Length: 466
Image 1 (cartoon, rainbow, N blue to C red):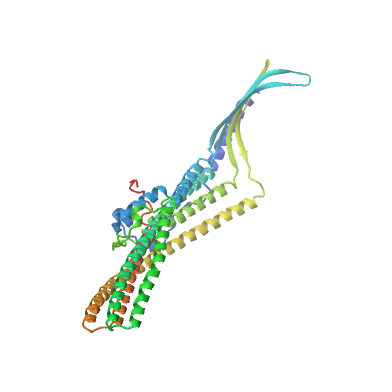
Image 2 (tube, rainbow, N blue to C red):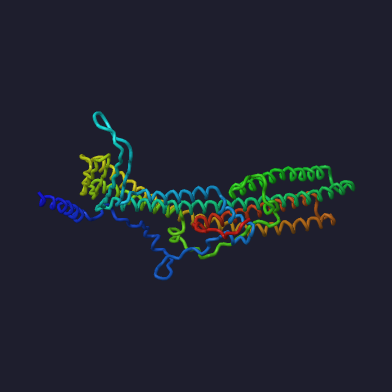
């Protein structure tokens, strides 16, 4: 009998060793990072063939506008959407810890009074201590951990995407604000000029050198300019409120730095060496999100496939009890084999579901890369076009202003009419607004180009306070 007892533990250990040896390999697919041949071949490599990252992480500073720089730092610190995105990263990190450990110890302890019919009541207690060690020969738990860690990386990339969206939003809102403030300044200058012209027309009419039509037309232009100002002032307040929300502040009380339009419209230039298209794979957070989702999908296949095979664990339980004079101890130690449900058609179908999801995420990554390249190519074209438009608009303003000066001189020499002056002033007004619109578009295209390149998604801020 004693010999039989010695063989049982040995037999249990041998069973565990044999099972671990026979099934000691992962059953899930190996992850291979997705590539696009035409993208990888266009990498502009540095030392050891490593792709060169973009050097314009803080691209908004090329506007040379300290107000915008401060707004960006405050927004990165206080924006509520960014706070939520950061919490999602924390949540994903915590979920990694929810994957069960392969080894665990459990225990419980209780005390009380026990009794029953024909059994005297007795005080006492009992306790137990359990040990469990789960073998992972098929890599199921390892796949779960890879999937959980991949979701952390997805959340990190989503945080970077939220930061990039914030940088875009605050920059464009600031560009729009300065545009409307410049428009207000131009309209007020235009109003002053047209009032000056109206005074001139009224004086000329007193000397019968101008007609009633000239006077009415000059008055109409003054009234028209006045009617445009309230709408521009409203647009300014709208942009101020938009910026306040992006800063995590209550709308309605703009900072002093946002009230005046004396700083002019932001203007920046893009460096010629921007490192596309291959650097998109490393800079754009949306592409990284797609790639990490594919990584998670592959890990999920491994976890699901491992569930098709038996699960082996080694465990033990020691129980001690003492009630009155009755005391005892029980123990158990040995392997436990859990067999999957048969038939396993539903489990196999779930594996196919995971495989399909992985193929979908791979296709989604490919679509993200193609879409990103298209966005960059379009942004480059639009940015180039905006720069050419600004150059032409500046020339137009200069020529029309010269035309107004010449017309005023010719009127005094009877070489031009009031109508010529009104037309010339109207042309200057239109040209000024057109230039302001082109500068606004150029600034927006600059932002769009950098955002489409993924620049700035890892910027942490300067740490300056307001």
